[in-house]
Length: 242
Length: 306
Image (tube, rainbow over all chains, first blue to last red; front, side, top):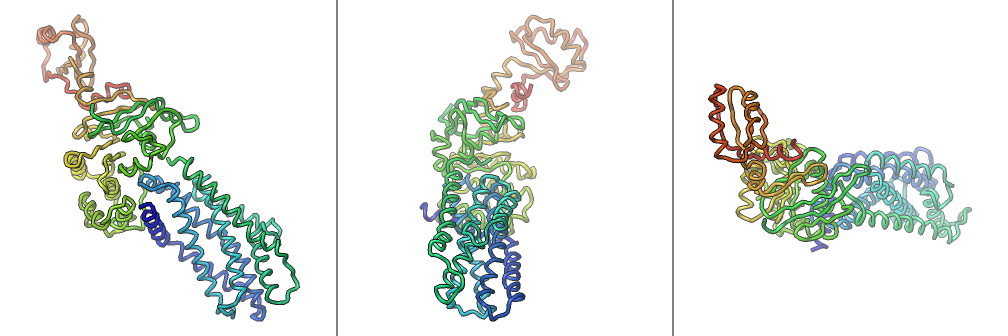
């Protein structure tokens, strides 16, 4: 029964997400920004550079999209009283938290994968191009960080607009002031992962040590796991819903 | 008093410097109970604690004998609730939303259950309309439907008749009575419309500033506050009041809505004295009756109303 209820909750969340009218707008905007900007500025001969450039744009744009969707799902529903309604049903708090996070994260991931699949023919890439998958790995790790930061801020602030502002500005600020080659920033991590794979399949002037690559992978996973664990404990055992 | 479905002992809850509940001792027996109090008296906070949405600072809160914070899941499994300001997913149809709720309650045939409950609350015709297109009254009916789904043992209704038209209100009150009679469902109804509560409630709890001012069976409360009280309606009430005040048999007398209320010590003496006074003062007697103690009058008599 608990498993069945959890699945039903995910279906509920998924249906609600699909009804979110701004989703279509966000997808269209992302496609426009990601697909057209690199092509305008770079010749087709440097397709890998185009790909890496589009990753950087996506990292920045992802902050705003993921923040908007996650703050709507957590802070927005808290603010509007939907979580109060849901928690008045026989639903365990951890089930609701997990259902919300899993649904939003996987749908957002799917959106980005669709964008990438559109990227393939436009950039003249092969679907078997390994650098494509290196890019996807970097972006998904960044998406995980953005989603977990927004979730934590949502539960703390409980107001949708303020959550978007706080999460997006702090994440965007980190990207702006942080070292572009550091694993602390999304662009830096994406770059490290991209170049690490690139040097392993072709001659590259840049050299990425395995330690740096491992840090670029571990940092977002550990940070997100920590934030999500704290958020889950707070949501399940401490948070009051009024 | 029968078995209690919910009770609190010395419940304390504050929000910052505001004390919402200040040692609340609430008792809700099986049956239909009314929970009344002024705005900000602590009704919604109490409901939040009973459902495990809020954590009490001190004291005890139990529903079905279970601790409200630690066993909230089990309590919610057996309870339906309509909050004062419910927000439903606007992009769902009423039918789809109720199917989801039925699924959460573990009802095998959620489609049929949603269909039946929509019929019960009179929303069958609008079942496929998006909730965001519902009127305020229709949304309230939908709220009632989701509270009744799965045949809960206790249904908590916070302002259930708000935004519902007069005929709808009558339907709703009849439905509550019917459910209690047929299935033994207990109801805890928080409302400001006392005349509606009066038609269906057996028990009343009155809250003010986070404390229970009084509670009990409505009949007992009426006896407590209105025993030996008569209401006299005459042409010049102030004149009669002045004269009555001089009588030794009178414990207390006052004017309310142009009527003279008298609480006496001895009924026989009172019945002898009053006609003589009215004749002597040459007053026109319009009515002379025992105060029935309506819910509104009981409410006025408690510290909340006075």
